[in-house]
Image 1 (cartoon, rainbow, N blue to C red):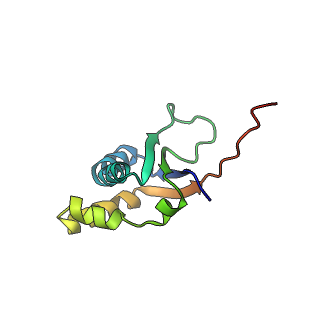
Image 2 (cartoon, rainbow, N blue to C red):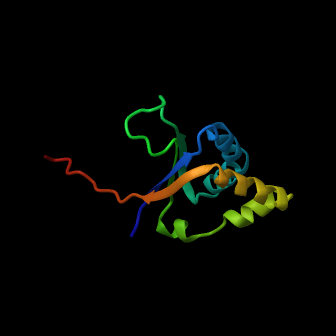
Length: 121
C-alpha cells in the first residue's frame, strides 16, 4: 500500500485535568513529534479541541492527527530513542508520561483509509 496514512488519536481527560494533560503533552510528547516531522517520518501533526464545552456527543476533548509518510513509517518505532536523546532525566520523563496518561478516562486511535471520490460525476 503506497501513500500517506492519517491516524486520529482521541483523548478524553478526567474532569478538571484537560489543561494539565495538554501541558504535559506539549512538554513531553510534542518535542518527539517535531523530531519525527523533521526526519520526514511524519508529514503533518495537528492538535484540536472542541471550541465549546458540551458540543453534541463529545466523547473526546483532545484530538491529535498525525499524517505518516506511509505504512512503513507507522511500523518504525523510533519514539523511545528520540525520548532518550531529548530527555536525559528518563526517570522524570517516564513519571510525567505515566501521570499524563493517568489524567485520561479514555484514549483510542483511528487509522483512516482514504476513500477518494470520483471527481468526474
